[in-house]
Image (cartoon, rainbow, N blue to C red; front, side, top):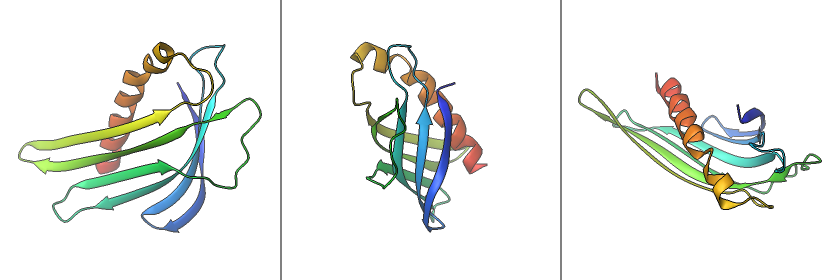
Length: 123
């Protein structure tokens, strides 16, 4: 599993927090990554859900051996008859030395795990 853990750094409001997350490397030659980001979540009038996040500079030192990634994205859940429409847009810059093919390989697994996390959040 790539996700190694995370912690809440600051709660700005109930729907807006700053988090630090840590991720393992998929290969021994690549260092693990961490990310500090602001996360905003809203339940919308149509019964849908919006989750948006982006990297921020925050006074948290980078642990030795880690590389800090740049990360931003948004998830939108729109209720529909018989289910929902799920839209996800993401961008990640792993920074440091990572060949493109090695960066893209784990993306499907990461996306599927994020979808499952969003499913749990909206239940």
